[in-house]
Image (cartoon, rainbow, N blue to C red):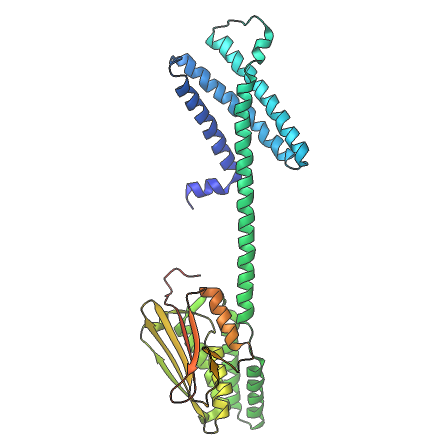
Length: 360
């Protein structure tokens, strides 16, 4: 964190810095404005002395204004005007004393009340100081409210993504547990044990990974292999899987568990409907600055309208679409189309990012 960042993040340091720079600026402007009047060191000393007096005497206003901000608007206005007038009056007296006693070498005015003159000039300066104080304070409050609103929006956005991400299909768990129960009844304990281990690893992966952050495609594929190995126990030789992952795409970042619902959909609506079984093809390749991913089956197909499944009545594809929208806004594509010669193909396009690149 730089020195300037530390300065602006601390209200205390920011106040003293701006307070000091403001009065230093006053002394400089006053000196330039009176350059033709007098350039002797004693006049410069008077200017610095007046600026220091102003610096010192306006500090209490900070604490008075803090207290006044808690009052009703009318009372606050009265308190601010009264305190500004008192400080301006006292500062005018100090400036007159400096002028008569130091610059005029002890020359006394004819009447004592002359020490209380020039209050209007002092009031203007103190009023400017007060205006800047309230202006900066209100700006800080607005910025803080914006930050709080942005933080709340971000938290709600992340909560929404997590909710979408953790909508696991209970049918998969029920089917897997039933398959394990059947294996145990058939005394195929080794297969049941392997299936329990795969299910445990798959669920650990699906729940441990933060859905806000993206993971390398290679890691996602490992989880998908676990899932498919579980399904292969259920379908035996009826499920064939073909992987076509272009070299280099393993490091591309993808939302965790983004392909699993697509594969689950294909198994539910295609593979399970075919007595002889079916084939899944999972493809990933890069194209320019994008990562293209496909999940295709050779099942009986489905009704597709405007690039979407007309039979879709669950949360699977809607879930994916909303997650992509939340993570990439408009910089993605998600479509469903007919596969050739039969079946359904789902295509995804997201920005191609790798682990060492800046990402959410």
